[in-house]
Image 1: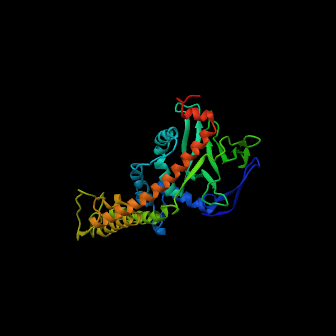
Image 2: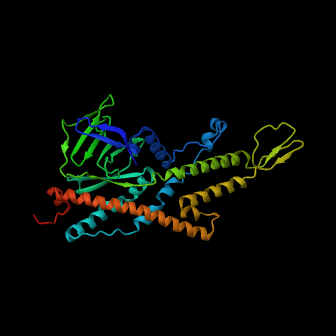
Image 3: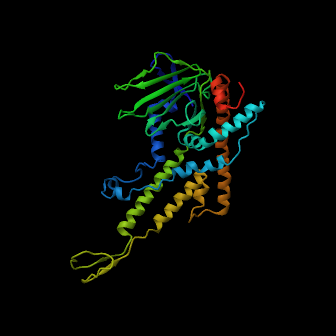
Length: 375
């Protein structure tokens, strides 16, 4: 992870931020968009010929079976079933931390693992709700991209490129009364909070004359990082192979999957199952042999299981993977899950630390989180 000269200057002129190349460069955003599309099942037709792509039957046969969500989400159940021990010298703080983790952080683990697996980063944004029914310090998990738009861009500093020093969170403000939704963003750092909105000419303007001083003195955002980048870099080529195989299988089954009859005499009327055909020199054409395509499909699934350590794929009906191989895959999957669990644990520890520091400087927030505490 390296910082480049990509910079963002706040509209109020208060801050200049060096944005992470992974989250800001246009070519990287294209990759993130590519990853999001594949996760959602919007796949490119890689591997098909120009003739196949131009065929009127393309849409009829191009219906990819999207395996990516199953592979990305497979570790989540194992991770959520584990335990996270919280140790604190202050019993009161420990009781709060355990309750807050169970109420706010644990339900978010699925998104944290999913976003970091797909996009390298998952950001945990802490915000204060002092009006809702479930008031208190809440957690929102933000991905770098959402619905084809940037959602988060980060500044990891210059001294320690693993430390998150500032972040830009972009979002669409809900449209009310028939009005068009406005694009807004927050620029957050330990020193200040700046809110901006996009004008009709696509430029950002500050919604307040100056930035608001950060009342907590700590950046209310933590990050869970996947050091391998995106897991989809391995999965997408395998998904493409499966898509082409499925296309060929559907086309072959539709056009050549049933016996055909030929005759020297012209045949009038419709021809199909149950029809009586008369003529001379009637010949039968046997259907194409689809066994090779089916065998290739099974090999692709087996390859997916081996390269992604997926026990789910290895245990599918018709799988040709030995019991010993499945044991090896289970061991490999557990190593993979442990690595992701360690990433989540580090994020949880950082998030609880930030939450505790926010409460320590905000009496109102402290009372929201500890309503039974004495003044």
